[in-house]
Image (cartoon, rainbow, N blue to C red; front, side):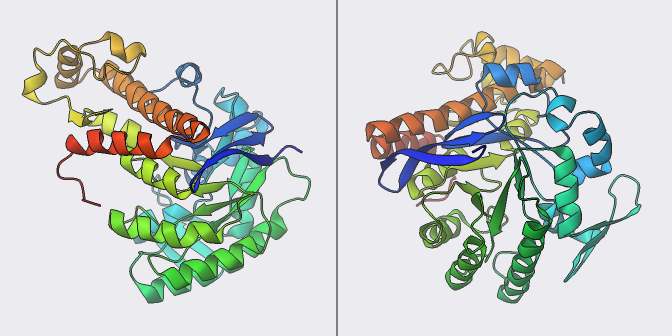
Length: 374
């Protein structure tokens, strides 16, 4: 079968697995950089391959608007269009219902919105989302959902019911012989009873995988972790579990400890564009004047192309607004997160995840004293 998920080791609730796809195997836990418009910002696919990135996420909404999903289809599909040989995941466009709320109108059948590019009227519904994602041709596609504000119970309830109705329509529009794995999305905000209700409804459809949506959208870290504690046990052990939009290094640890397999986030490239880098000792802002004469690499524990340059040089590039800075910092941050989840996978297999997690969190949080205490 093209899509099979096997768990090869466990350590507590954490799992090391392999997700088989038509474009290659994905060892889990895995972090997927986000390539919104068919490119991970500032990063050539060649370099992502060299970092051993196993999965990239692209955005249905943005690719539909530009260049157009039918153009991508006619040019061989997204893999060929962006020259990426590995597995791809496309989101459904549902998150843009949340993030672009000021330009859209939601009803029970879908979303009407104005294009952020030219103001033209657009319509997105479950069937259209499936058609667009089938044109793009990603290995993993997401059901169309509504992501609500996490603490407004009435809004969460309405969004949950829409998400469940839309999921059934997505499944019906998804061909049985499609070379794409359809994942359903569990909603429910920060409310345990709604999360449990949503998990039951979504898993009843026996899909290839399940995502937890509606987190990292304004709730506290403590609320996110409590929600994962309630939700993950409701998901089947023989399917991959995907926590959407989460990429902070400490959150990856907390997610893996609870049984999450897949993560994605824009954070490594977004931070790079603001001059920030991940290190074992916490996040650093390389624009800071204290790095003006610092000859050390960003993080001595990583060995990638960015490691060949000093913090002083990287600061110089940032202050001069040289584009090379964004490339090097993006490369570093993506490599940091890829190695981080790879280390956790190895620790799970060795039965040492708790030790790794404690050591990592102690070092990382010491460098981020303002981070929320657990």
